[in-house]
Length: 234
Picture 1 (cartoon, one colour):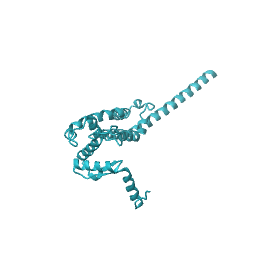
Picture 2 (cartoon, helix red, strand yellow):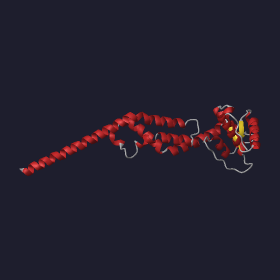
Picture 3 (tube, helix red, strand yellow):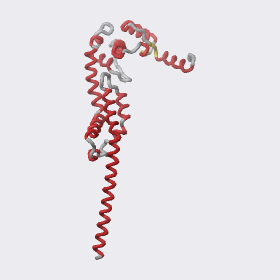
Picture 4 (cartoon, helix red, strand yellow):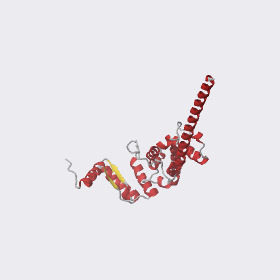
């Protein structure tokens, strides 16, 4: 009899532990489900924001990294450690999550593919402009350099290979495509002679006066604006 009672007690304990474990698991699943229900719009907003970067403009490295950083925490919620597929979420929510997850994990390829297409289209749309910069046609590398909108573009080329012409082409492209005012563009050079030459060539090609100066002069102007007087340089 005592053995039977002991078995019954053990059975009850096991059952209670199972029920408790199942209840905790159920509560955890419910909490995770509620979490995804609350943040479903964040997945949609993130995807819409990314889609906006792939329309009519060059998709820069800086914007890509900014987007990734902004939604890094959101992505962590759908990483492998969160088995959201087992939460029995609505199909609309699952689709939003899958779309976001796919875009986030493939952002490099998305950006690269889009930019290649964008550059190809811009070469066609602005062919007439690129065919006549200072009386000559830009080559394919020069055209790509003009179209790319990165914060920093390193151009390595020897003397007389068309670097200045490329810069003139870049300015003309910015004025035509984005309708910038001439006072919104600053051109910097290393020497007074090269700055003067650049200003003349830009004016001749675009008909507009640009701020073209040396790095040294820019530094002095910034100091003068902050300090209220020209710096004393010996």
